[in-house]
Amino acid sequence: MSEVPAGPSSTKPYLIRAIYEWCADNGLTPYLAVKVDGQTQVPRAYVKNGEITLNLGAEAVVRLHMGSDFISCSGRFGGVPHDIVVPVGAVMGIFAKENGQGLVFEATEPGELPPEGRNDPEPPPGKPRLRVVK
Image (cartoon, one colour):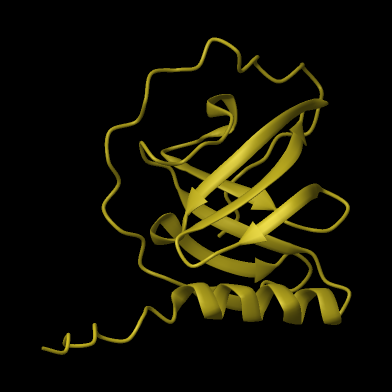
């Protein structure tokens, strides 16, 4: 008995990778807008109104992996290294910092936010902070 093939996979991870590559090819800085939920691993001190915007530029992150289910990398926040894990479903958009061109997506319903991490220090005063850019 043969199995019925599953429906086509989501286009969202492919579109995210395409805009990322377009930014890189054109010397632009790719920013990822994320709706933070219980599966999203980011420094909680930088989350505002349940959202965070991440700089995915080659100068900002290392070990970037853009899979079909998760986007992961390592980046520094306030000089402190953090591992970042973002479910593709939580991505609200990807765009170029310089001109705002990119794509907006509907994020899936977020789950419960985990408790504030005790290892995530508050950003030092006077240092740049990540913010949601609309």
